Length: 102
Length: 144
Length: 127
Image 1: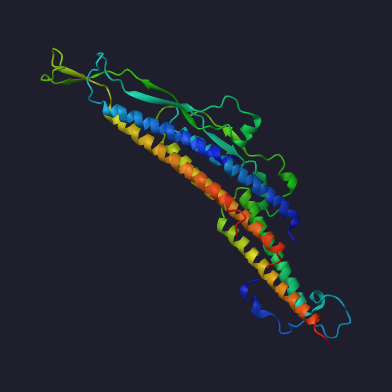
Image 2: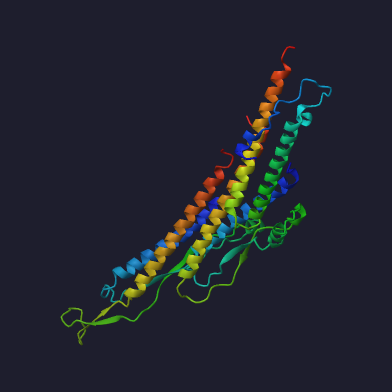
């Protein structure tokens, strides 16, 4: 996910907590947001696989794309860090809401 | 891998080339020398270098590259060269025909040897700096 | 995520670093002996052992750990150089190989560091 992915979070961003028949985690049943998050997870996974592939080629002696290997690694690292931050904020929001006295 | 061995190899190369430079300088300094006190002429010297061998290298050493030991000086030889005759009748050392014998040191050869020894010395310095940079970079692992 | 390939990549990186380190010693030995008569240059055999793995990667395949068994960087002695002519060509070649090897070693180190920091940030949960 690129940095301006933040701007395309769909309008339905609040997880559907209110009428909960299910007690599943909001991440899998949160509607559009949940599926978006899953998609981002798999994108990060793909990026890491691409970076890993480039690293293996470099270790095997194919140094023709050194800059590409470095860029892919950086991209994978940044994607993962971004995803971690989103996950942390999600958890914090969940905790905050779950502690609200109703 | 033993980074110190890399330093030792380059250091041995540097000391061999340094001796070569010193010997060349001595030859050049004596280029116009006359007979020595005992009547013999100065003979140009040259350094014979060989690859440094360990007495015995183990299997492990062969795999890890520790069997490489750089270079060493095998000996400093003097090659008997034809003396150079110069016509100087006024010279007190001149023989009955007016010729003075000078050493057979060839200035051009010595200058070429000096240039090649200097280049080799600098290349060894570059190799040693590269080894140092690589080892220091390895130490930075886990930093950020 | 990429756990299965992680161990294979780590093993490949370690071997590549070993090979680059050994290669430096070989080049340094060649440079130290540049004026030795009858010297037999040394080199490291590793890249050619990885030929089949490189082909696999180029075709888009995956590297399995059993493909790495038996691959080991070793020193190889070449033929002794004959003649006592000018050795500047050899010196230039060795210096060029030195520069290439140094960059390769540092690139591998950098890659190892970045992978370690990714795992590190996952452990720290991004905090």
